[in-house]
Length: 100
Image (cartoon, rainbow, N blue to C red; front, top):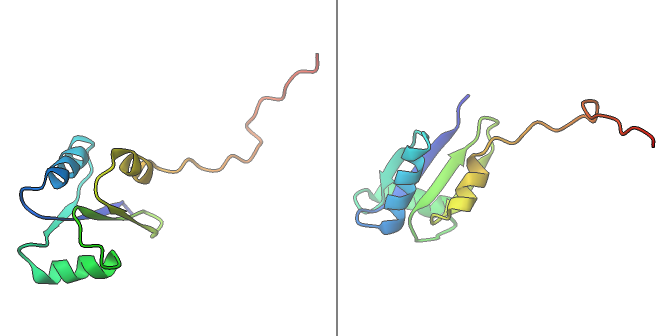
């Protein structure tokens, strides 16, 4: 299954705007929950974030079912979280070094 991204935001937040722009630019679909307008979304965010009351707060559910919680918007953190993990190498596809 695909990656699923939920972002918890408020209006007029520079960091929320940056996050939204980053995801859109990189072609990631996401669901957005405005925690100012919806108290249920706010309490949901607080329970997921261990009561971290800052936005944006992002929950990424990866195809394998694991989740990543990101506070704020630091591009390097998102790059790492959203980049597929390469499959582990089994050591069989390496070129043996030639003896000198």
